[in-house]
Image (cartoon, rainbow, N blue to C red; front, side, top):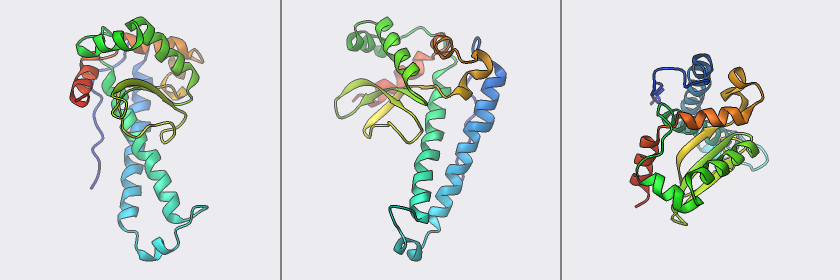
Length: 198
């Protein structure tokens, strides 16, 4: 069964994040992860007992497919959440705004923390609801399948790989993160938060 490539949830450029950047990011990179996710999962569905008998932690076909699966699946999901995060006016609203204030001391302190994490990470910054701690946490990842915490549900996702900003901002990642916050759709973030916190 093939996974649907979700459409961009907003009409175009997000301030200085250009149509060109978003088109390449969505139509080539994200779509590529979706296709690889399907390809890998098809191969896993066809795997037979001969392959299971050759499983090995150093290298085996099964190990390669399972490693590729987490990379492609997380690449798909993280990009979907990233694009769903944008298209708003950047003004925090709903219960999430209050909880961010309480959890981080103020919304501005949350943005400062999240931005610093975005400068430190190589791939992703994720504001998540940690179901174990029952608290908001900011987690980072250097790759799609690195740094994620099981039981933590993404609420606000930021791609900090260079492909997300280099055409528009060069090496000025901080300016990109500032622009991203101007276009966050906090209504979507709040809907995710209210649906998972219980």
